[in-house]
Image (tube, rainbow, N blue to C red):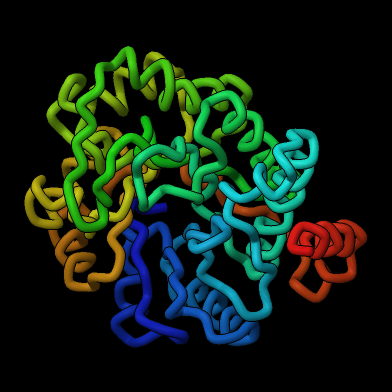
Length: 336
């Protein structure tokens, strides 16, 4: 698998899409709401993507639940993670059960359409960040770790790997890294005791298969945003934590990545820092620039293949299972 994950234009592939997918650097496709009309179309699009790709690829989507769920009609309405504890009347055992069930349900529905990954869960604390907000399970580390553990356990039971984001933590900055360069001025000790502690503990439990770093600068640690920082990715994530899973860059089209330079510079910097796969979204010219400026014979990254889904039944088969029926019952109870 190549190190580049890109997107496609619409509900079916264009000739330009097919040309990009045939490049050896392309190892993944991320889907957005514009790529979804209905279930039949989605299945056909994913089939086209797999046929057009030169190599095996990962197909991903941001399908966290709540306001970040790319497919709506025909898919279960997964709740925002931040609502689950409150709607469970702050009864932790009930919230744990919901997290496990909804993690399984989200993953099972995506897998049934031959999607390998939902980039979930969000492991940031719900602090001052509006872009995080109710995407986060909780405001405090220990309850967040507990709820996220159950959500990931559900994902794993369905057969999907989990990608925690946004390392080492995005919840303490007000700015949205999609449109600004957030700066978190805390010390390493403060970050390690709160935000990074969540990642450390979930990794220690063996629950994290992938991690996506934040486009946030932590100047007390390094002047580079975490996703471009050898200090964060190599010294702390790989060496200190001992994490050997996949490191995904966040989208290199985001404003939080812009000060690195043009898209070729961003791609090279992220890979050099230690990212295994880089995301370039919503900008086909940028994807082409990255392809034109990276060597096409980059060595195969064996970590990436470990995130590929195993064969499973389609959506019709899923709906006939007892666990799906029980999950729908839990979802109806949750919203009642």
